[in-house]
Image 1 (cartoon, one colour):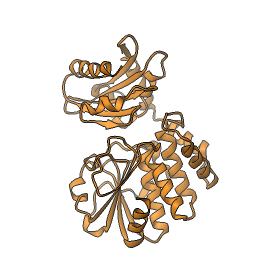
Image 2 (tube, rainbow, N blue to C red):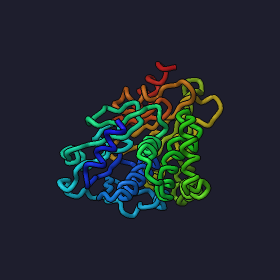
Image 3 (cartoon, rainbow, N blue to C red):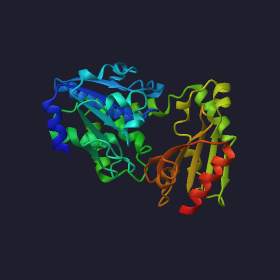
Length: 317
């Protein structure tokens, strides 16, 4: 599959790059590294994302070129959809993107639907960034500092700072090589994790007030209400990382974050330790992700949604 993707790049001139809604470090780092790599080869490329780039990722090289309005798709020979298990996860404009002649999917979610013919999918990989690293090193192009920085950010964030179970030998070798090519671990880590707006910390304080446990302390969860978001001047992006906190508590095997949505339902993010499969939980509600990290959306009032989720989690213990 890698050779086929390299052939597509060689054969075509113009490319669209996109990823999922609610952008994270893997989505952005992979997009920006791919953009820089294509430009390095003399190709024309655009990055389109439905959502704006979160503040803590705006330092990534090239982030200023990202478009939030989809250009006319007739200008593109091919499109790369990265870190997406399904094309609809791109959000606004995905139907138009489907009309581009050649679609290439680079992803590591176990729930990936193989929605296009050219799908480079490996659920064992730590991140989409790790898969792009394999492509770039297979091609043998020089790796610029910008590419290295973006790929390192992708690996760092989707492995939770290299401590999730998806962190394998190849992940660490890749990270080491990226540092050798100019990525600065301290600078990248500080800008992503130690550059929080005050409103995010205030939101976290309010979310921690909702911390509760169920199933004999094996499940910990928090709730973020829309009214609280507004009260502290926060935006939904500021909840990134909140779901990891209950999991850090001794005895908790599954953590969940319930984020109230505009339609009255909830986005539910899951994290787990060890062998607990939360991708199965998310899949029960038409979501997906990874064995130890997943998410879904569920309509209904909080108590009903919470009970439905806990019932599915309990069945997996």
